[in-house]
Length: 422
Ligand code: HAM
Image 1: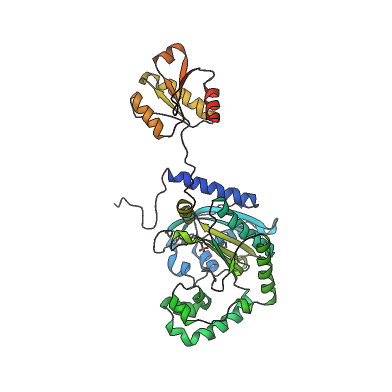
Image 2: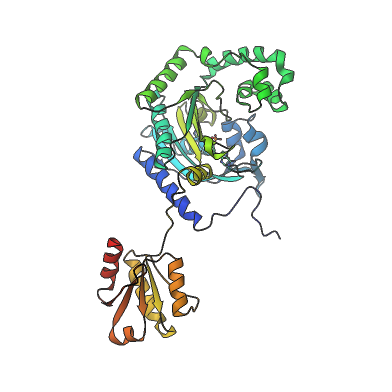
């Protein structure tokens, strides 16, 4: 038996869990401020959902899905992303016939079989938002403003926001033909991945990380030049709305995104200071996804951010601000005989909302104080022979070390008062 988590997965242990909780609280609060409400979907779905939603020629579907058969021989897949699941939930529960737009956010694990490295895992976590039911370009702007606001609230101000329009299927088809004509003579100079992309989805060649591929296709026609009137107007309005909201962005002709459902606005946000996996988030419109999954013709837009990458950025660039949960009060007993009294007081404190702890390892009085320091306790309550005999507690400030005798009735209020004024 291997005592090691599977490759590309890892445990999140305390005190790191405190950092996760801190970041997750900011993500949730920001989404709620923008009017998004939480959705939780299953960790696995029918494989077909991702094949149809994400696209059969994408890297995710061809190489990266954790697909298995259950005992009834159904093909199921651990979710590699959550947009398709949200579209499925929207259709299944007929949300589309209720009040629109439906604005949802989620936080949870996703699974992709990719080569692990810093910032890239096989089980990773995404925070995402999805808004279904409106094609209003100001909604695109809202979603992008939310993405940027998350980074600001995390203290991450050095980011690069790239945006593009990947067009509607009609103008994209016209463009695709022109791009194929441009690439055909230099096809053999492309990397092997791009040769496959050229056959299956030539736009993805633009997204290749290999310099040689970019050199080979230099001077390629851009999608931007081929936008139809409606797509061009939509894109122009999004850019104007972002400018008016003081969001700094750059138009990027190479940005096509790796999932097939995108239409019109597409965007990615990078934090250059965190290494090779610098994309902390990405998203866009997906006006054909709901229909592709068997629902009505309903537009949508959203994004997802990788929480591991956000934490990496917070740790390396924003001073690793964390919210590690510390003990407020430690109860120290001078004799085993006072275990019951300690447990009762511990419960009273905890029910009053105070983070209280005691020793369970039979430590000596001195060792209990050292342990209290390790837990970060600001106060200690000492229960000894005299305290029991005379009915009071000794309350000690762990920093100044001054002590006071407090009656049993007053102990909760005294602790609260000292914690509030410390
Ligand atoms: P995506 O670009 O595939 O989009 O992933 C979004 C983010 O998830 C990435 O920018 C990255 O931060 C993080 N991520 C992706 N793969 C990994 C990995 N293997 N390890 C760590 N982090 C990773 C989507 O998933 C779309 N569903 C986004 C979306 C929502 N579009 C519209 N709505």
